[in-house]
Image (cartoon, rainbow, N blue to C red; front, side):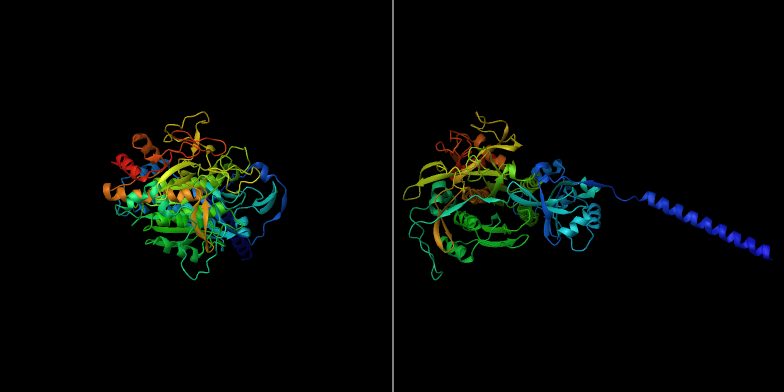
Length: 578
């Protein structure tokens, strides 16, 4: 009996050992079939010299970061969207395209699993091409297997990951750019300045003040000089058109209300805060709103604004504004809306990832949502890096998906008729630009010349097959603006970009009514100049300079193709679109 019990016990031990062996074998098989996901390190496009600069210390874990992931897009799909027939008045229904254009549901679910820790907020754009992430630095550091440190470099500080951040390889293969994990890029510079005449007064907000200085240009002067009034005479004031402004500062309600009352604005003005509300009003947003409202007085003006004084990467916030515009127009790509940006920075002062992210948004706005994006070319003349004698240009004006707008000095007679116009510049204080050197223009160091940039004057002794700017120009000096309770004279290419945006909105309104379509994209302006060489769609600015390049007949580095002759431009545009 004892031997039987012993044999039974040994059998149980043997079976247990066999069970354990099978269990661990199965566990091993499961482990082998589901290995931990491989990770890939990400290069954020920060110059190596900057990353090797001295470290001051860690970035506090509680620092709130706004991060953007831009996904790769099949260029064939972008081109297909670009060539879709425009159908004004009908919904564009881009959600269907988004399922092919951006990431699919399965990929997004895997991304959400990767960013699973609480406190990380994800927001996927409607085109599924951009992911916005909000989280504290300490949380992101754990997820991305790195830490954040503060560097001291060339007299300024910036934060960045101490080691390259790591993401799953499946995600790395989908990424075009990641921004907001550092703030190496210098913040945007407003391309504007405001001066006040002697004896100017500050309104006490007790009564409407519609008495700007007699020497400044009011909207009626600009409208007459550039032919906007010829469209007004046909009942075109911007009705049913939308102009989107991208801002990093705010405005004062009393200033805006006073100006809108003076010009009898009948449109709609709305504000959208992105990544937080602006912390101050520096005059840029005020100028842009007033230029657009004064020239398209029945348009809808959407002001996308963010806090340019935040400590993060302001360009990520600017890109989030562009993505908000994209989201708002996924069903409105047939409307002929336009965008105006009066911000920029020297091409060498922004990371390659910020450039790629913004370039992708500009391309989507143009090709997918059929908008023209006007960007001020900058106010430091031919020296965007603010170093006198150092030839450089401003981004995003240099981007091939943007229409770069330079500036002029415009003279009119007592009736507002154009009498003289020269490239805008001033004899400079060579030590400080202060947005007063003149109209930005030159050759890009980032982008090759696109095939559509072809006009008389484009091939010249300074050209090197680079993207050349500006494309167009408009008055950028001595414009009446109401800011901080008083009238002043404002200037800069910051004014020129919204002037063109308002003009294009009026032209789109005309061609939609007459032809059922509209023109958009930078190539459109060269097509107008090329196909209608005898139509004089632009006023050719042939005198003046930007402290290096001189205005010439045809396209040049100071005024581009020229300033708007809107009565003739709308006819030339109709010929191109017909």
